[in-house]
Image 1 (spheres, rainbow, N blue to C red):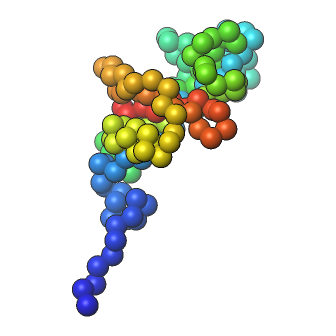
Image 2 (cartoon, helix red, strand yellow):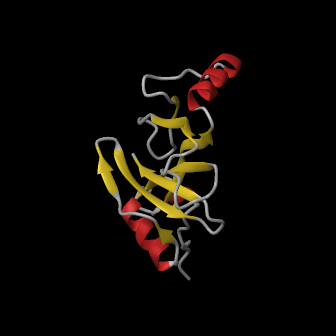
Length: 143
C-alpha cells in the first residue's frame, strides 16, 4: 500500500501553497464613530497609536507564505453615517487578507454566501465584500 497523505488546507505541506483560496490574516479593523477625528486623537494620545497621513493606523506584519512581504493591518474609525458598511447594520467591519481571491469568491458563491460586489483591482490589491451568516459585512483583500 502506498504511503500517501491527503494534503489539507491547514497541513504543513500546504503552508507554502499560495493557490488555495483562503484567508491568510487580518488586513483591517474598521468601526463606526460619532466623531472619527476625536476617536483617532483619543487612541493616539491614550494608547499611542500613530495616525498616518491617510488618517488611519498601519500595523505591519509578515506571513509564513511570504515572509519577504510586509503587510499592513489598517485600523480606522469611520463616521457613523457612512454607506461603506452597508448593507450590514453592524458598527464594525473586518478586512481579511486572502490568497487567490477569485477562487475564494467562486467557492463562497458555490456555498451560498452573499457576495456584495464584484472584485475591484487597485495598485495595492484586489478587494471584494461579502456578508457572513450574522449579517456582518466582511472585506476581503488580496494584497
